[in-house]
Length: 340
Ligand SMILES: [Zn+2]
Image 1 (tube, helix red, strand yellow):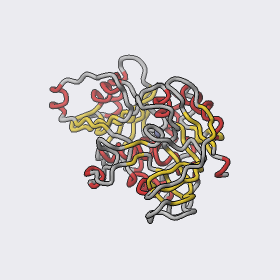
Image 2 (cartoon, rainbow, N blue to C red; image 1 turned 45 degrees about the vertical axis):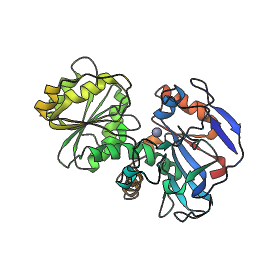
Image 3 (cartoon, rainbow, N blue to C red; image 1 turned 45 degrees about the horizontal axis):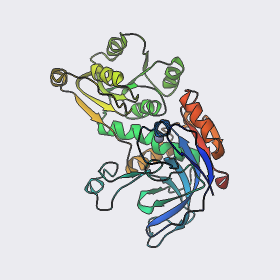
């Protein structure tokens, strides 16, 4: 089968020929239909995860069950599935409490183990989310991560109807935070440097947009919010924006960090205390989040066309990464010939 692997940090992906993998006990071989290409793949290529290479990237994928290993009862051959990129130890106490995305021993598909930039991938059966009836595989692929991630973040922040949500960064994640915020009944303010992305935010329902430019961005966003934001979702990997997010939050505000900056940010305890702020990290999403966003998509409450502006064959994975790095697209979806 074809697979596209990252041989080392900072080098292009490489198309390789590999044997079709066999599922072991409790495992499933999935024929990949579509896999999104996102900022995490650039982070991987840049060495951000610090994981051993080579690895096959690809963590937001949809496919069809092709073969099942011994003891698999969760899915059957021919069933369409969304691939949940995390695997957790069966005895994980976090998973038992509905949080399989955290814990010391989780592994990530496309980071720690081979992912879905390939014709086939083998996954533990417990990580697969079966669809009740088939949906567009391109949509299903991007729903998992690009929509599941902001859904998880807004859920952690307990966003309520009538509250003001500020979204910092209108990329693959932030654009969907905008439309989910509207779905939850909040007033949404989108903030971006890019006029084009602010235009997208408007078409996705943002009530107000603020172009981030100069030192007065925080003041201008706070003006639009009135009393400051109830929830700020920070989708940009930037410590400076982490600080802006905290400054934008109003009394009893919740700041959710989704963009992964590695630099430290500064905050004064008195500011957190005075406004009684909550600062949260949000890591990925859970299978329940995938089920929830699939339902929203089916009910017509979500658009995903802005995430599928570019569709490329697997062989063009490097071009897809280059498009993303240059900011030409929010997402590209890779499709496999085997699936078409
Ligand atoms: Zn991703």
